[in-house]
Image (cartoon, rainbow, N blue to C red; front, top):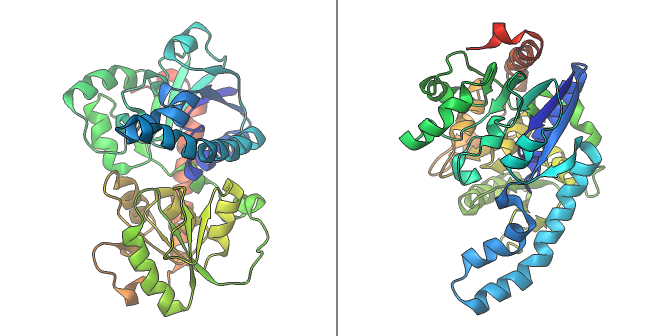
Length: 373
């Protein structure tokens, strides 16, 4: 069967492109053809990426112009890096879509329509409740499935509930990435939702080896990966690096060099990203996918809770029995450096992997009448 997938595959984020790749690989392993809807909402258009954010950041005309001039080539480089990965590894529709209307008028043809993983239902990130991510363009007679979708939160306001509930009720099967959001799903009128693993964790460590590049330096290092503010992580990293005699590397999502670390690694490709994780001696992160790859690659790590949307971190740590790896406040160095029993962790992960794969396989194969709420 052909499965049309809507997810966040076009944003400049390592976890987003890797979860897309993993979804595609799993669907193909089931014997199906996966194709991503190449959807560009307004916030992902080139105009917004290259100009829009600059206009929002600076109040003066001169500031806006300076920002556009400085950031344009840097954002262009990011676009080239991530688009290259999408072109090389993901199957996307030949047509690009920019609105719900375009999709309704000429929807991609498929047997099943799937909302993929990541924070596809987070109205804060999407800037509104986007019907496209709820598959509102799919033909009425076709099956709709959600795999590891995320609201990024446990509560919606009344207006968002009113908008979202009708979309949710059109699905035959829904799984969420966070178990904590299942009551929210029930409040929207869908009672048979389940919690599953993020797609990146459906693949085993050996499945990611195709992306791991040879190590160029023997220098031992601690790796920081943060998608928000890394200042607190930096304090943790300094203590751990000193105790283990490690250099500090930072994967920078910003554009400038961080002077207090040994290396700031900017504009790295997804392949370089996962290689940096594999070769690191210790990882400090506040990212969900940073945590997921740390676990899947069996690395020593700690994570700190981001200021918002932290339920995804708590969920994966709980499922793998690694709650103690979450650090809040002052770091307990002895606890942070304690070895992780990856034999037990991998057993837990394999159990969750089997349950998640079983959900997806059944959701695809069981007739609509038997999977609806």
